[in-house]
Length: 360
Ligand code: SAH
Image (cartoon, rainbow, N blue to C red; front, side, top):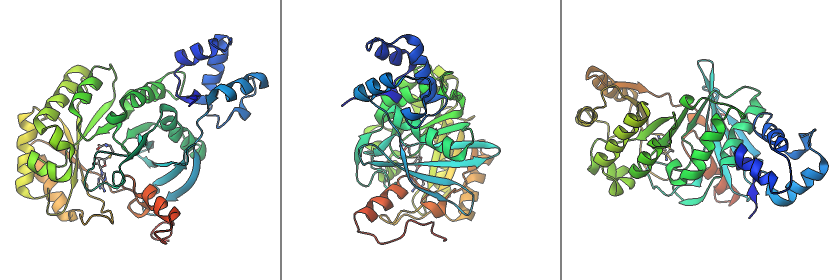
């Protein structure tokens, strides 16, 4: 398979063009067309000669995601995009605006092999990793469509980013590169289910991104019920790795805690969570609470709003900063992998349900 031009950082692009007897300024021009001006194809590249375009087409792929569907939430304006990829796969991304900022949630894999019980992305396993260019293009396509600059990026869509380590770190470097969109690494968050050795490796990368850990339970026993990855890495190992991340980067780790009715949401569990975080020196850390977004293949339900608030109060009273995350885009299959899954089913003719927003 040919290399993807959009996945090459400037130094690699320069070397690849040199191999085709092209001078370095051509690499800079091309990089600018792809990563600054967000050209969807070679057509727009007015200062690149046709002979070079032909040469590039022969030697490289040029990632360009095609928008298949966009759904806008009537509750909060959040938009969910479904993009088709060159190989007939598709992936989803979410755009939201809050407090004058625009954030995009990108997917890092087609499907996922982590098996979290409440997550729709993982139901059919992993199909393949996304390339850096395919992650970048989710942001580029959305920027073109909205006409607004993206200020924050969260790698919290489908997939486990640390299971696609090389492409994801490449993506982060290119996204924050001054020759591209130049999004500050401090405005990029990577969320992981907790691959401890990879968290340590990430800590040594010299990046300034925020790490979010999907915790979801205060004990190994409970966590195993929700997340098979807990059989591989204990909470002890994962939280130690998070401590190492903080030590190396100075960036505090955020904890994600999806509240599942009757499974991880009672007072005792809140106290266990407080003890766990305190025993790992996480006093200054932040917990995001989000009632689980139910998926039709599982019978998990989100915690009732009053109990979510009580859980938050307990954490707060005990010195653990906790925010209740707004459930954005609930009416548009907001949770990971739900939209793609719905579309796949429709394509297969198994589910006649419409892909229109639920409240239309
Ligand atoms: N694999 C990474 C990132 C993708 S999921 C991770 O596990 O962190 C992003 C976040 O959404 C994770 O915290 C994940 O556990 C959570 N999530 C997935 N499906 C959900 C659902 N149906 N309801 C609530 N949170 C969900």
